[in-house]
Image 1 (cartoon, rainbow, N blue to C red):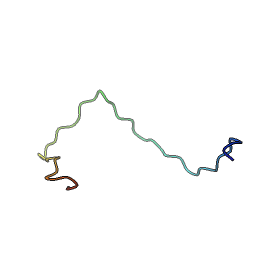
Image 2: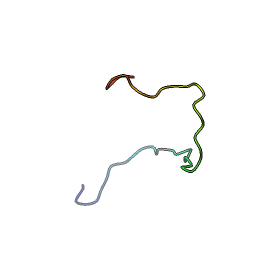
Image 3: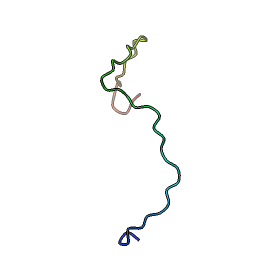
Length: 43
């Protein structure tokens, strides 16, 4: 099939609803969260 350029059917399509503006300022972290792990593979 690959040699003939044939592909299988793909059902559904990912819908993109929002495109982030890279120039926009991010909202401040008002809760004071710390986004660092205490050790590797830890949340």
